[in-house]
Image (cartoon, rainbow, N blue to C red; front, side, top):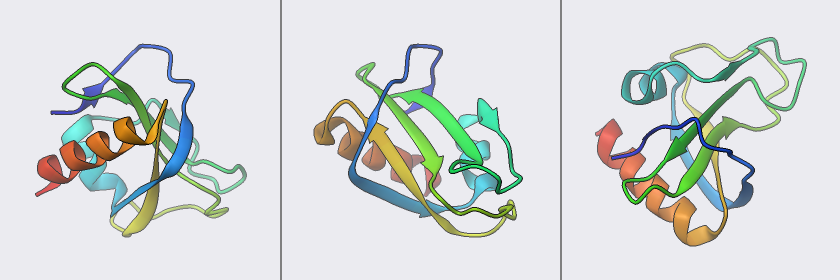
Length: 98
């Protein structure tokens, strides 16, 4: 299962997304490591995580430019070093959210 990580998370977007809420992500992963829910920047919430295999990925909202309600379903980007990692992260997250 995916988990929070303190490892360096310099990731890229590979067209992998997931739709869920801030509350649901917080319930399965814990508090986001970066929270600035003002809408003033490109990202309000950001989690640095790793897959079961230890591969690093990030989950973040992208360009909402508004404050996000904690129970609002939005599209989240999943960043990683390659698409294989982001797809694996998506699968693990979906398992955890269901």
